[in-house]
Length: 176
Image (tube, rainbow, N blue to C red):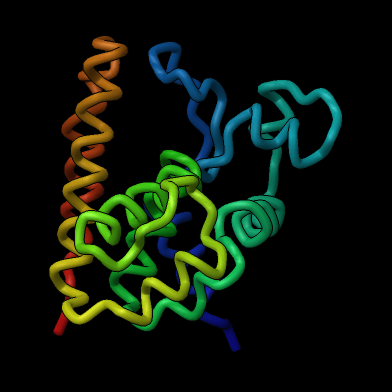
């Protein structure tokens, strides 16, 4: 039987696909969404593009579980928000996803703490005060769009990825 994290990882793996090494992509060689730099960090040893290409799905799943699913995420009661934050973290780093969440919660007056990208007890406590999950979901989604636009603005060659990034985001809808 699979668990929630396995289900979310399966969804991400379907979106990420197999091996790519697009020279225009700052991530470099990537397989299952795992970059060369991430694999190097995970293995704590130098790796090559060939190592990325030969990486198995089991390794990708272990990396996602350990590095992209912060402790406490499983307690987020809204499955749509959880899936979105996990996917956001895969593309931009878990800290970026949590910073977006914290920014929205701060704007809504339920997170008066520094925006630090740490999904710790302060972030989890703020989530207990959420009254409108749908509004939170869409506000975090807007933060992700804005972050991607800023990324394109700082590195215009990434504009060629904008449609794909937008399409990926549009796959996420809050369900009630």
